[in-house]
Image (cartoon, rainbow, N blue to C red; front, top):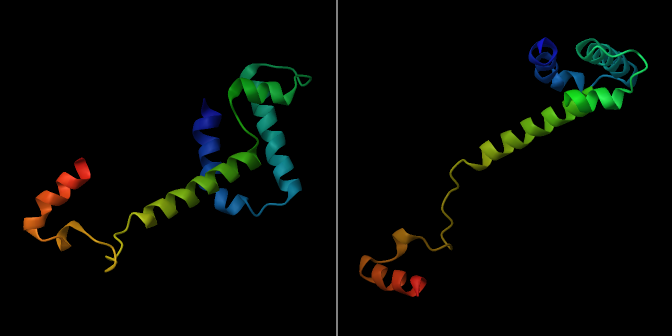
Length: 111
């Protein structure tokens, strides 16, 4: 669908700016989305928006923006957590175990 592939991708791309919109600006975006949903499904204006949204699996624009911002925030924090952490000297590592004791250590853990 053209709406999802083009318009929604623009909304996702601009979500960090759109989050600052006021309620009346979101209302106008929602009205446009509602009209597009009616056109896509060929429904009259009397059709309930919740039904159209459920049929097309489209959330409200504000919900979509919050989803996108949450996804970006979590992705950025996960990427940051994958950076190597300096070794804590109080935490034992395999490199600190002498080679002759390595076999006995593995036997102890496996049993």
